[in-house]
Amino acid sequence: MSANPFLDPSLVHGDLYQGDGRLADRTNALHGAKISGSDAADTIAGLLAAWVPAGADVLDIGCGRGTTTLRLADRLRPRRLVAVDASTALLHTTRDRLGDAGALGSVVCADFHHLPLPDSVADAAVAAFCLYHSPTPKRAIAEIARCLRPGGTAALVTKSLDSYTELDHLVQAAGLDPDATSRPSLYESFHSGNLHTITATHLTVLDIQHEPHVFHFADATHLARYLITTPKYRIALTGGIPALAAALQQRLAPPPYTTRSTVSYVVAVRP
Image 1 (spheres, rainbow, N blue to C red):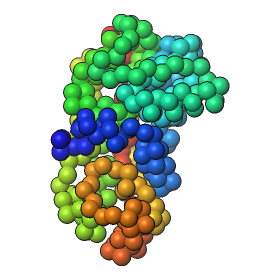
Image 2: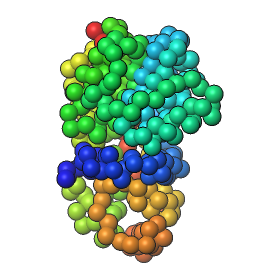
Image 3: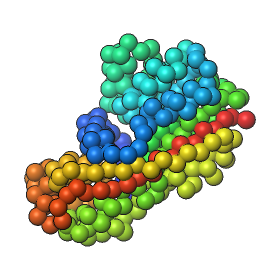
Image 4: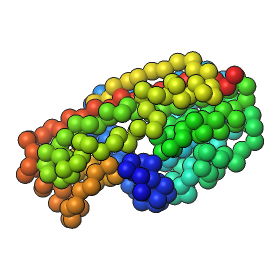
């Protein structure tokens, strides 16, 4: 088992994404706490719209629950939109959301290291918040580059190594995980500090943007709702969210609990 749960295949293909509930709960808890920072899906769609004409063929690699896929459908009006993910549960959610929105698109279940797509099939590709699940992100980017037509545009998105480190200190201070501050960053494979170097191995980098995000968890229950969804910590506590919230409330200073993240966007083209 990998020391980093985001790089552990048994977790990535198991508890983390076998269903869509855990990801939805984590995303909702974060969005509810965010007080600063733009909507990532809107930013991605806006970045691509500046480089890619309407009617393009677009891939959304590691689409998750389809939030970015929907923004791409609305903003770019692609001729063909293909959402790719290794989780069948997440693809079902994406397909349902596309259908509910009346958006045209198809889904493909695949590992992003081995995309079952022809060479030079797309004008644009997105890989948002997924490449840090690869122990060899260069291989995944090589596949994305292969699927792009010459001159095709990629938008890759990740987070900084120090994202949410304030929570490490809170969890450790509360006695819930004594090793919380020494555990590796979930984003160590592909992060704000190395995304340029890794991307440039197969694509020509045009632009990089780093945006700080700030989160305030208003109370212990809100923080517990997030912590219970993240695999980073080893919290040996039964009783779910109520028990975790009670422990946080008893052992920490009064809320709000503040944490930060940097979201980094790189726009690149296939030479």
